[in-house]
Length: 475
Image 1 (cartoon, rainbow, N blue to C red):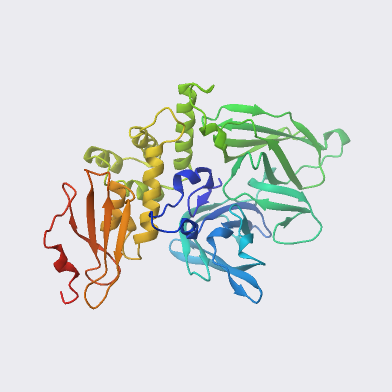
Image 2 (cartoon, rainbow, N blue to C red; image 1 turned 90 degrees about the horizontal axis):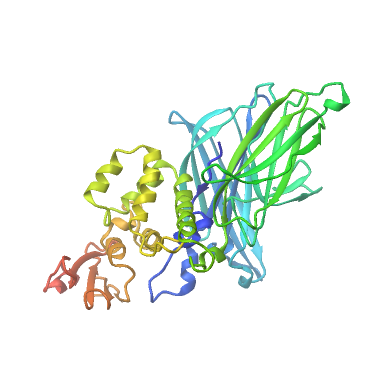
């Protein structure tokens, strides 16, 4: 079964997972974090191997372009490592580049893609993924379980489903070329107003070829299911002639009428001669901004809004691995109760997914809107803490600045004082609407880049009238 990984959060929830910056920073700084998507699909390979295609996507706005003659060039590197029982089975690295005439060509929604592959034996692997912007050396990494299916059997079967943003006939071969088609991957499985056609590609293997002409056909049926596995769209079955022992199938269905949420595409292929049916299902997401501009009085009932919100949040956790969910809950340590921490610790993966949906629902400050604004804001701050304060030694939300950011929000003003012969580097955060106005003073006491809280006027926080002693460079 396909697993869709977001190296930087899914675009379907970009509002939830987008990076924010402090008030005094430039607005375009928010685009500097790598925005990477990843997906993979398995096909039949040669000699009992499975051919696994790997798809990376990255927004051009998050890459660093540097002058290259009279143009601008970026380079990015994608790599994977496959392990079994802690033994490295294979490792591959791919380097790609892109050249533009002007930095103005870095459009907000423009993506670059890279399609790579590995030939491996069927089985379960630990896959380590890394994507890096070569110029800035910024990178994102993830680890997932890669379940590589076998196509060794002589039984009628099909590949996994590749969801695409565009498919068209092609003669010239490039990285997107596959069996006469150019298939542009959709790594996030996201569709909506700007991409209203759900396009897909798959392959059929071991098709039986009887002699009778009227038995050389098979039937393909598409169904769209909601997050509860209930059919919401049924499409008429299509009868196809068998081209040989194998076949390539492409298709596209209009999803423009679907409300924002999580859905499944189910494909059923029925061999009319052998009377056998094979099926595959894959998840996709629909996001339409207009759905979230309505209120219950604008033709949506409160129940509909509540269900949409629940679907969106459920969709987040269904595509997250257990370590990813654990990591998110860890970052909620400042707002979770002691009882919630105890309950979460004893849950399995299914229970944790349900728990997180309820965890955020209880804190929803605007239950009449499809979005959970409380979760949106908190997760954004977690990502900001990771970007601004994280290091290879400690997560950003665990350091003092990260903790204050998560508890009190983005400061109204930050004063920065660089190190000098007279003082160590320090920062003062101002919150004008918290408790009538409070400050937090952070000092780089050890002078290795981590700012520690030494003084605050907020209730319950560290208070030190003589805090200036901590900025003494001789201390």
